[in-house]
Length: 288
Image (cartoon, rainbow, N blue to C red):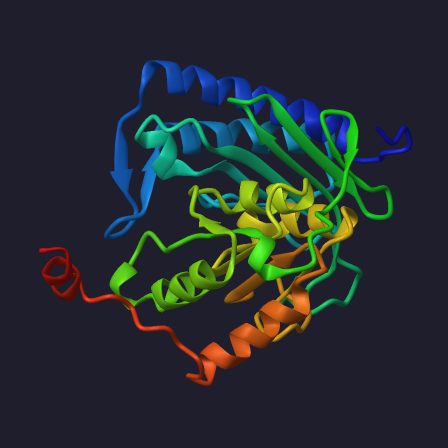
């Protein structure tokens, strides 16, 4: 692993401590509550965010912290950490061992407007159940457990394994089921595992060729965007334009199938070439 990392050595230690705490909660079970109609939060989310806040503040006292569970500290500084203490809360609450801690660092030069993005300069995504530590700093590659990783070389959508996610709230209003259907018809398969940060890490590691999702937040994507880019992939919106941290569209690919996916999104948004979703009643009749 790169020996000249600036931020990663301390951030990795913090992520490992947070992961150990999550494993303890996972083993004993936690009580869940709802932030909205279907958006879960647990004591694990809040406890681990507090732990990460304390550790980051000690390690990087001048850095700001923007956390999923409400932490907003020192946001007028040059550096800002986006913290998701538990990405995959629904999995965690149902004892599905697929979740992670995500820490992404943005550098914001003086005078930058609040609605403008700075440069992503470091990222950590830690899967405590598999003990997989993904780390990156700008210009220094992407790494998994000390070994450099690279995006997949697969060049065709039909040979690609891809991933997506669905919103926890207002699922019936999400158009993604139609996109899911179209990608399923055209790819080697679509996975929906419930952690956007790990989906991005898997694109960086070459496990997936692509990942798309609507309405993600900066704490979901900050670390993963840089990880994918440093692994040789690309992250844009659905039209192929530069992605923003608060973007309503995220498309991460290995770079090899980027143009094919952008063209497919263009067709779908224009209403062209949609396959027909099977009516369950017709399916039952056809089987009888």
